[in-house]
Length: 112
Image 1 (tube, rainbow, N blue to C red):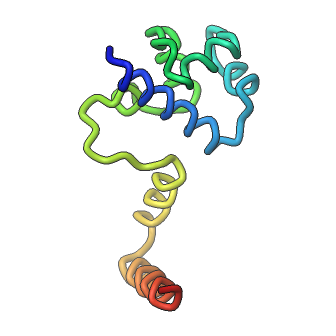
Image 2: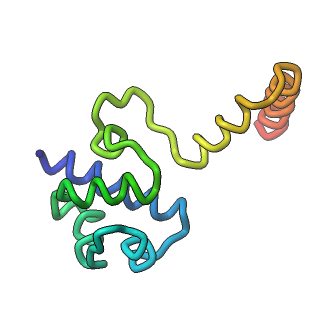
């Protein structure tokens, strides 16, 4: 595993934690088995390769794919909030989707 991949995984874990608005202590408290805040800090900084146990614990605790976390076969990277927006959007009727798109385009034009 190269330094760049370590950093990529660390960045993903950091961004996930920030999106969930969790401190490092709160983040590791949700993991089973337990891990130290220092271990998480080193992973987020790209200094440590996360163990398979850590990866499994994060994926289970936060309902994310290990493929996404390890950057395997990823063709698009979206944030957790973007994923939530897409899930909500996809549940809407086609007419409402179009109205939302029109509104968004209008807002973008006004702010350009």
